Length: 623
Picture 1 (cartoon, rainbow, N blue to C red):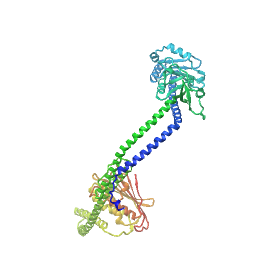
Picture 2 (cartoon, rainbow, N blue to C red; picture 1 turned 180 degrees about the vertical axis):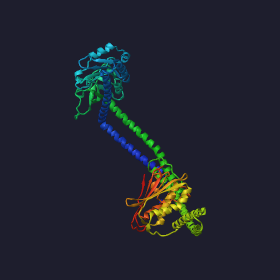
Picture 3 (cartoon, rainbow, N blue to C red; picture 1 turned 90 degrees about the vertical axis):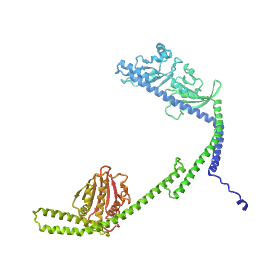
Picture 4 (cartoon, rainbow, N blue to C red; picture 1 turned 60 degrees about the horizontal axis):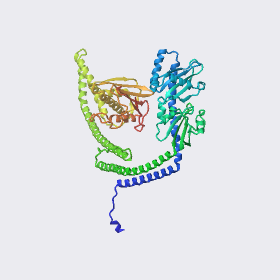
């Protein structure tokens, strides 16, 4: 043990551990995948090729059906226009020319109505480009007539009608209701096979073909078979009979299947699928040798990709581990900085994994710490400001007490002088004004003294209207010099139990807030009282800018204020909330941006209230 302790401990970095684990994992996974795929290729390659052939055949059938349905819609457009007798012949000719331009695949359209000869319109330019004359084209159409009776019965007819290699075409015929309710009209169109031929040439490994309702090649990887309208002699007879038989009625028969057969001495794997449109089928085939060669090539490619993946895993592992450990190192350094009181640090993160989540949580923590530090400083400043305001209130109360005595002397001498002067004398009028204003000052000072007096809460019978009058008298001058007009709408209300001094403080807080909200242009503040549903209601409304909805739930929180520093402590509405709560009252806000703000206070009437043990008010913000 002693000898072992003398050996140096080897420090293995985290990125090396991560790389070793990644290499082991990638090697294990790639090896397991390679062995599994090799076994699957050797044991199930036949099933795989059959499934792939069937899938490609079904996909080809689906695309073929989509093309044929599109052709059917185009035929219906031509047929509606050709059968519409309300359209002027010249206008109809112009519209048909436009349709040929919009649907360049359409070469000619014939309309079979009743027992009359078919009416045919065709694109002369397409015939000229292919070197085909009008007479030869019409003669070919007469020789290969469409089965009109079967089509009128509801069948859709599709066949290869290629006349020249330069103009590979198919003929599609569908029935339409007659405009006069008689025998259905049959519309037959000659359409270029360009889209179907592109579909047949899409696959490189598979030979793709489409067979029409008469068992001839409609589209093929080899265009020569299409030009000759060659029969599909290589398809097994049983498959051909089922696929080209009556269309499926939705039973349990498969839409397609695969089959192995010999074509021109070569063993083939073929997949066949019913198109479900006009007794057309789609098929693909591939030589067995080519199919297995593809599987072997795929296995060799897989082994090569495995080695490339292993090499790439080494490089990516080195870079990735470096990125991860670098993020952890940054986080460790940032943690040390926060421990020293630096809350401004933020980690840049782009990843959305656990490291990114950790960095985001760290940033959120530092932001919250910074906010709380700022809030703590604000709270400290608010407490200092609150103490200053309390001291100022005491000083104001002392000044008011000192002014009260000289004011009483002014009032007494004014009344004494009024007795010695006749009422008709102008001096008497002046003395009357002096007495009135002196009494008003006396009321304001007495109210200010009551407001500043630190007294325990004492509930008594209170006249809410009188509380409103006295509170307005205290702040009336301040509101007037700020161009704020006060409107009173006081209705007779019953008495309530409460503390008049505290209720007066609530009113003054709301009035001062309203005055500050109306700065600098001034406005109107309305104070109203009434009885509503058995409760006393006090409403204080202003014509200010209103309170945003996102701020309304926070305005009663202590120290929350939107005013600049030095203009508010954030305690006024919090104190108001507490006083209303102590009076078992309710306070809510009605405000919309730009529509002003209304504080609605309701108190119970004629109820013997206890002390502050009553439940808190319900605070609701009404939009």
